[in-house]
Length: 184
Image 1 (cartoon, helix red, strand yellow):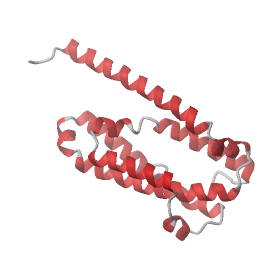
Image 2: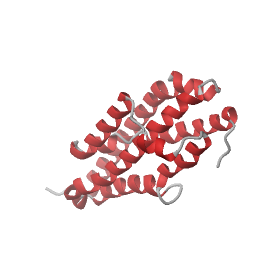
Image 3: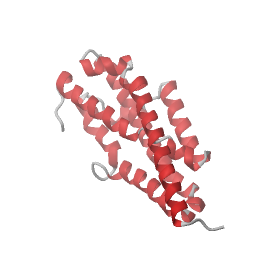
Image 4: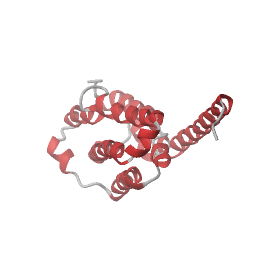
């Protein structure tokens, strides 16, 4: 049975509405659980100890490297599905490209190098840091979802990407205002 153009348009609109509803829910949860978390409140207000931020920085570096690698590997794992659904291939490709090319070659991970230097953290400490259990669990859950989860769930796990950008923007402004860092 072949769908009519109207049925396809209706299905596409329903999917768009559903994804937007999920994105709004993810953003709401991010606001509730991340922006309001005591760590972030202290950072945004300039009360967070530098040592706590350094610990976060070390964990976030490893998380970012591992998540980016997981997203790249997912393209291969989902290849049979992606070949049949080029629009979904575009979604995954955009996500991987964003991680690896912005703000330049190497992607977001490269932003940790000058940030670590600003906090006098040698690269060797970023690379060799042991993750706290919560960070290890987050990395493992996200990478496992990318490897063996349904494609829709793996993509849905990234619905908070815009909130992450907002979070890191707030973090950057706080680091400039309260901790003496420059945009560089």
